Amino acid sequence: MSVEKARIGSARIVLSDLVPDGRNMVEVIQGGDSVICVRRGEMSEALMEEWNQHLEHATRTGRVLGPETDEEPAGHPPL
Image 1: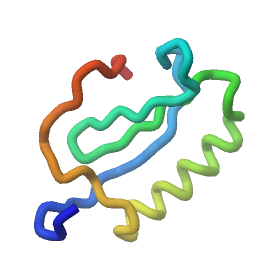
Image 2: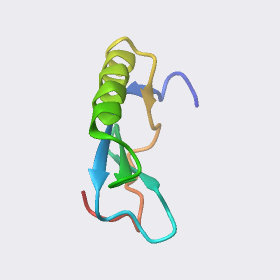
Image 3: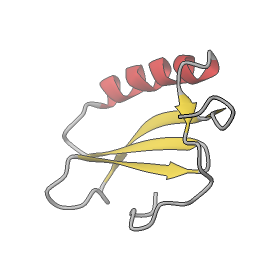
């Protein structure tokens, strides 16, 4: 990723009933935000909340960078 195109985004985990069969998680990118959709029952809500606190800190301090493209990925289920 080139430094001049990098931008800080956000990242979070959500529990979703829309994860495709055969997968336990998928990443959906919206703008500069990364949303990890995890199949219900594969992650506890307590672990999800703890990871979201970690991801919030990482994105706030610039340790996580968003994608370098504004292109929207195709084929992801809606959130």
